Image 1 (cartoon, one colour):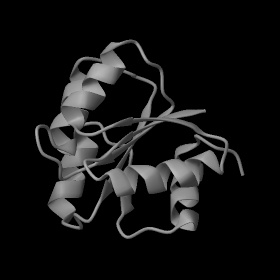
Image 2: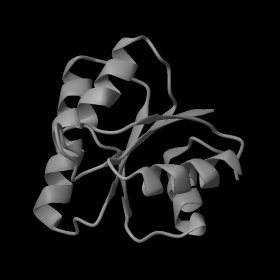
Image 3: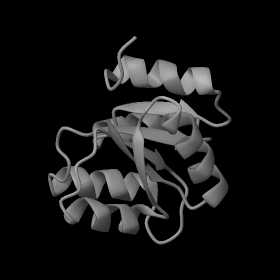
Image 4: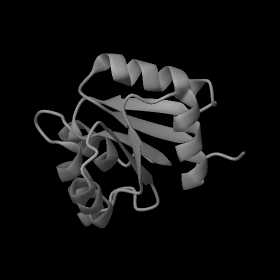
Length: 123
């Protein structure tokens, strides 16, 4: 299992890596959406992308739109990691290729539950 963690906060990237490593998930990191697309274009294969919404250079919504349009990682699940609770934003993100949302602040248990829901880990 491989995951791409995309967040402009090095603290959040490190925290997610720590939690995922405890679940035997191999992680790579990107600091924004543009960086993530470059990693994916290098033909890296991932099962899951944890994608922050609010980032400089390219935000999470722009990133998910572009990666789905370019068919980068077509089988990869995209979990938006965000503080955005606005229903219209969530609907827009889902319509543009996001698969699930993890609301900040989150717990290790809520991350695991979302991963189970997406089918990227087994119970």
